[in-house]
Length: 146
Image (cartoon, rainbow, N blue to C red; front, side, top):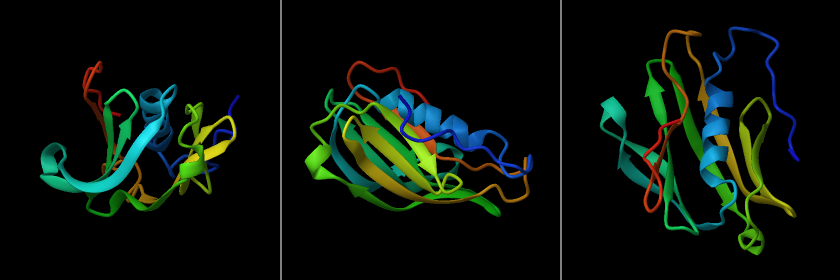
């Protein structure tokens, strides 16, 4: 069951599908697991050198990084995050968003395990790159970008 209805935009030029694709990639990486730790780090990110990223360490030892991106006037960044320690023992059942993809919810059966406040802009729609650079590293995983 999806705790949060899938968001849609009324203006076709607001998002080119990047934000829903990011949510799906994060969901694929974390559903069925527990978050062991969450911290911001500087990591190597694609063509642009290093970027700040939120790195989630999961119960199977894999690390999922959500690296901020920027390309001229387009960007995606984690402004803040809140891990709810009382719920981290619960297996993640989904990822949803509210507020036009500005609030991300990683949730379990009893509610949000983690909340992310996300700033983003597609800039000049369909021209510049934006969206998190999502990478999974570690045991039992093929590296995947989202």
